[in-house]
Image 1 (spheres, protein in one colour):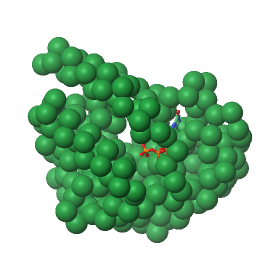
Image 2 (cartoon, protein in one colour):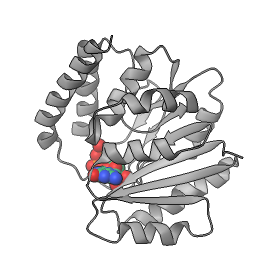
Image 3 (spheres, helix red, strand yellow):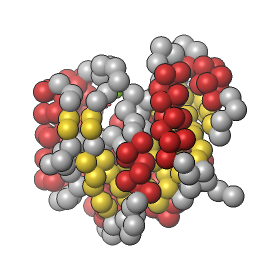
Image 4 (cartoon, helix red, strand yellow):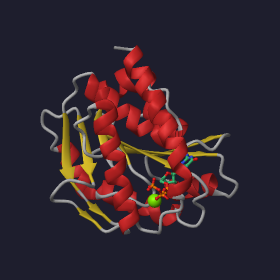
Length: 231
Ligand SMILES: Nc1nc2c(ncn2[C@@H]2O[C@H](COP(=O)(O)OP(=O)(O)OP(=O)(O)O)[C@@H](O)[C@H]2O)c(=O)[nH]1
Ligand SMILES: [Mg+2]
């Protein structure tokens, strides 16, 4: 029987945190108490992330996938396409919650459930610069795509049908994969519901915001051209 929940977690050079992160995610899944699978997709790590992931997942419904090139979006795509669950949720290794899983399972008539860092009832404990980046990024999505979604990064859940229909269409890789996936789901008329979250990363962010700006702008522009062309 397919599981109710699939959780997909992309990981890269996480040897220092993978055990703690996976144990936290597994205990959230056990706490929620529905049949699940956990799919950890490592790519391009130069440490022993994959081996530690396999060791930590022993005896649990865990699949560890390893690919050559470091690419967040390629890892997400691979994990989503392997997932068998009625709902497919994506977590970062350092940002997940049992409450979010409960929101997803209670998702009634929703097709997509987004844990929005910008929901009025959310509590975002990240540093000011990260919160500002989220706001500016979302403003861009509103202007460039007329999107009504308030956040595309972070915890998200998708019904099987959304994954099957939309994931193969997504061309963006790296960190814009999530954005194109959500924008395409929105454009296809799937019902998106946002839920509040407590944002408390379990370790400081590793990526430099400034270095991401030019790549993000160019990537958004390409998504805009693709979506316009596929209308
Ligand atoms: N497979 C894979 N996973 C990645 C890659 N880069 C980052 N990740 C994973 O993506 C998740 C988020 O990455 P983080 O390093 O925590 O990102 P951050 O610095 O907090 O930045 P944001 O979360 O984007 O604000 C973690 O689970 C990482 O291990 C990659 O190249 N490949
Ligand atoms: Mg992080």
